[in-house]
Length: 315
Image 1 (tube, rainbow, N blue to C red):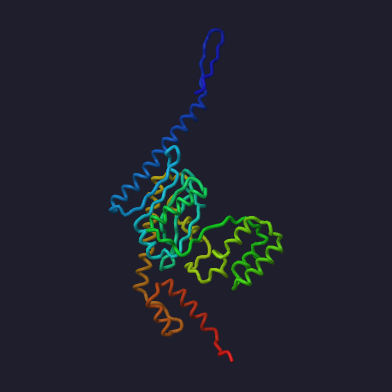
Image 2 (tube, one colour):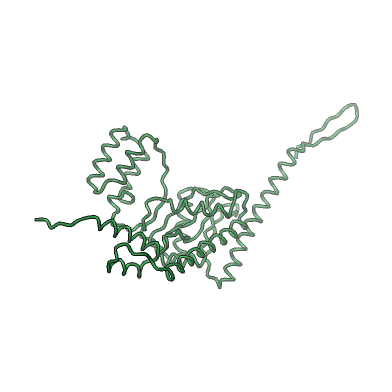
């Protein structure tokens, strides 16, 4: 606290820098509030865990000052969803709608209705490599150390819009590895990108994300983190920039309940509503019996398109 002494003709006047005092008290209240809010959030998770019969997975990491640095929690419904649909998992850390602007990571997949489904949650204080490693290793422990076949995450998109068309044509329209390599070389030469660090790093990872290399890798029709972005938009209805940790967890649980309700609604439609036939073939009827409504629609569209082609025996 700053004390400003003003002496005038023996009349002592002692004044205070009230703005500084306010700032100090505000910072102290904020720190106390953040600590109490974080503890209230953790208490809520542990209460939910007790009520579920210890079926939740909850892990925390604290910094040198014993303040919360990372949090991973997995609802038992998320664990069940991962056991059923965990072949592909997507995540990104762009969502920061909470009071502390901490990156929020929903681990996201796709269910049998082609709906987004949550495999767990994480909050992290920073985006250092060691933090990512802890988050992923901890989440993997929570789902039984059973890694997905495919993990989809984001890369920093730092390229100018003028080259996006050529870039996309090279990435998504190359049917074979040879075609991709030729187009990539042409693309790099055309825009003088030989020394572009990010692009070169991306090229080194080509076997993990270029379609020509990953056609035989199951991805549940996902080519980007759009599923994570869709889930971020979904959570916007439940949280805001003023949301503290306790409220954040409460509302995340509400969002999770709504998500599983949507899955049950689709289950009902799949079981009780008949599907219209386009070709009336045995294959189409069989598919209508074994696929969910949305997956049958996708199969039916492909089957209908394939009927437009003629097959001739190669002489």
